[in-house]
Length: 262
Image 1 (cartoon, rainbow, N blue to C red):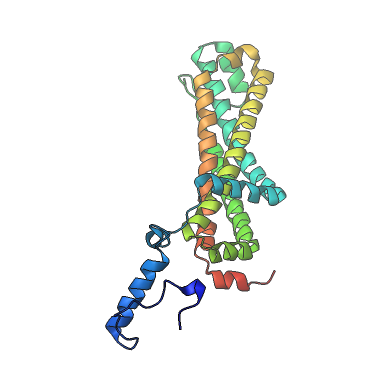
Image 2 (tube, rainbow, N blue to C red):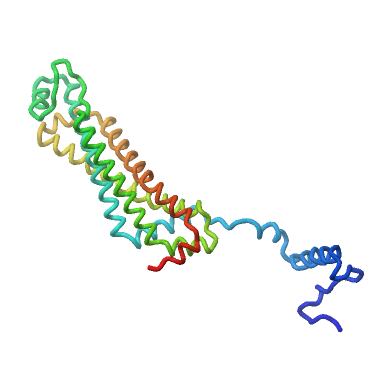
């Protein structure tokens, strides 16, 4: 009796070895595989490749995740804004002082001394004092610890989300990329806002204490460099703070993540 209509064409070819024969089973399996994939060229090689999401899709997922957790992201970003703004304020204030010293005006030098700068008779350059460096270092350290804590809490809240992505085929590097992108977006926004705010406060304070003429002597290149350096440090701290939580999320086993009750 012939094979059913939907299976015709897959019958064992004439002369094939019996089912019980290993050589016959191997030949039959190879022949059926060729018949099944005859209408799908290169399917056997393509099916073995992993599906990779484009980078733009990863950015979109990271952005939507930040929007969903907007208030928590805002708190984390604000801590970075405060630390970076203090760093930018200190650097730009020193740039203003150096611009005033470069003019070699005795009145401006006295204005700096009255403002609290410790200037020797031959001093021509102002840098952050050891006390300022320690305060800046501590503020950046506290900011980094806060970022680590916030990201670890985010990983805990997203156990099921991470497990679902991994069950759907997401690789460890994809999960790692998502957390790094989220931290990079928050770090960029917070660092730019903080550096600009700190520079604006330093310039406004300089105008109030020394006058517009004194502030105008500050080199624009030095001010821009201080803003850029503060922004880069803020982004670096954000990425450093997310490194450990991102590794924890990437190494999470899907079964364990899906088993967590929320």
